[in-house]
Amino acid sequence: MAKPLMGRAREVIEKAKIRYQGKVVGTVASMDPQREAENYSECFVRDFVPCALVFLMDGDFEPVKQFLRTVMHIRNQQYVMAGHTRAEGLMPASFKVTEQDGKQQLIADFGERAIGRVAPVDSAMWWMILLHAYVQFSGDRDFADDPQVQQTIRAILSLYLQESFETSPAMLVPDGSFMIDRRMGVYGHPLEIQSLFYGMLFTAEKYLAPGNDQSLLEQVQKRRRALRTYVRLFYWLDKPRLNEIHRYRSEQFGPDAENLLNIYPASIPVWLDGWFPADGGYFVGNLGPGRMDFRYFSLGNMLAVSFGLATDEQADKLMRLHEHRWMDLIGEMPVKICYPAISGTQWQLLTGCDPKNVAWSYHNGGHWPCLLWPFAAAALRTGRRDLAQQAYSQAIHSVDEDRWQEYYDGKTGALIGRRSNAFQVWTAAAIVLTQLMFERENDVVFSGLFTHQ
Ligand code: GLC
Image (cartoon, rainbow, N blue to C red; front, side, top):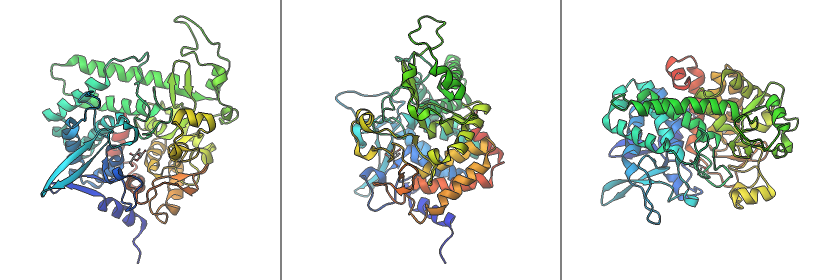
């Protein structure tokens, strides 16, 4: 008899485990023998997160601890590009275990084995967030207090809190520095980075040993609060706010300017006209001087809810938006990565004519089953189990039969991605994790993980 769905999903995770000196330290990104690219056989920091949460919920803490240790240790393997070395707070995008003369070696990738040498800005943030999850589930506070871990937290903070050229509390990053790791016009202050930054600062606040560096802790607290106020006010978009922007006066000077960032009403895209239900809203994708990227990006929005960056009212409105715009944002295979897709000249200019990111494909409006768990976590936190369940039942309808695809194409995500890998590990992990979240919705430990203030 064929194994039930959960058994088959767990089998994908089990087979994906990477071992170093006999211990599990991660999982490969894809188990597809015909993988789209060589580096899918590595352990990506962001891809490991849902696997780690499955292990933690199973009470299997060791692989997560080993992963945190491994990534912490290989952080010093940075390559030098044109004589340029980078800060030690940066963490790799991925790593692999190689073997030579019977000796195993861990090899990190900081973007040199990725297309375009993109910077993995999100890695250290996921590492910190996972550290919080690990301590929360295992109760192993000693690990967070370990001097090496403390030193790593400090190294990360010294890089991520460094003053650069921001004019707001939001973090400034180059294009393709997170899950969307190709040029997509997501440079500047993308929402996903702000949500992760918020989650990371929360962890730092919690685990940074007071020591004699009180000022660092104060800096973390101040930045987190400022970021929260800024995102809640300036990234939020709903019908009343759209009306305000539509009627904005521009080119105002001085501290009393209402249109602080000088957003020109003519930049409001036509698709937004009539798109909002009365009680729905979302955080826009990016914000900067004279620039509001009105695109909807799901992961940043969902994490904003899970980490408490969104107010309760904003979280409710976000869920209602999904209810009303289900086919646009969830479609047939949950969840759409961003809406709408860019095409024509916009696609040419923002992606540099990237054929993998043509309209309604891959990062450009494609559907990613791995995004099911952040959606379900946000929905559960908002009391919308119904929406989480609806998305879940749609996903399990074909995800297994389709062989655990990485992504889907088309406006409603009904087509298997043109260059998608099969047996993508975070796809299987998202299904298992979502099922576990349903079973343990009221688990204090779990809600402790996501109810950041
Ligand atoms: C692609 C995705 C990236 C993911 C990697 C491994 O590069 O864009 O987010 O981490 O594949 O699955």
